[in-house]
Length: 306
Image 1 (cartoon, rainbow, N blue to C red):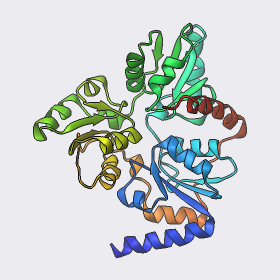
Image 2 (tube, rainbow, N blue to C red; image 1 turned 180 degrees about the vertical axis):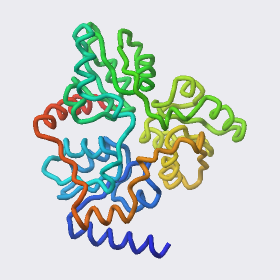
Image 3 (spheres, rainbow, N blue to C red; image 1 turned 90 degrees about the vertical axis):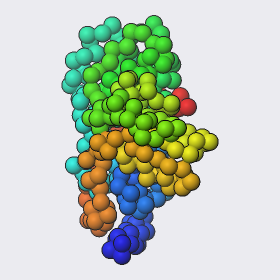
């Protein structure tokens, strides 16, 4: 504990020297979240970075998140404590595959989940988040087909909720959310009768259909905070339990399964954070030609955020 506190004190001093802001995703290690200036979802954190007067952004998350921060604030230096932290979901669709897929459709509107690479965002008409995928699909031109990628689970759920037909869905998925099974939800309900089940829309439909509420990570915080219920079963990456418990100390939260653990999200550590700021290492840059096109897709998404 003393060693951890010493690292946090060093981080705080170095952060001030570098004029840095520390951002941590909801899925990060508890001590990484506790050391951050802001904790949240990927887009929310990138918008915090853009609004900050910091010169350096230390982003504790995975690669596409740091890219999004770089897209939104090109005047800042964006660092990752573990630059090798990737996203298996984002890696299921690259720009070459997208360029090959789109011509197979009849002039589609290309909508990509924010959990995608900068190159894929740059080749898209619009991005979406897990919170506004339904609204984005409803807003898309009804007379044009839609290509949605890379997450088949989010795309299938959002198309169903939006009542949207003619959506061609790329067959990528998040392996962490795929590890949450319908049987896990049923077992958790038996173990915790009366608890509300809240799951992420990256889960499979059979899991979603067994939930009381479906929400993004920020939506989970809002829903559980406003609910009169005192006990919840959470179907997303297990790191989410930490911010939920901090925000609601009078409530009880259970993971739907301990198997929903993303190893990439756990690569950031306090020593790696300190090293990144000391050495100004792990910088993430997006080439300007890609950045400007990707920014257009993100801007269209932000215009219809819920």
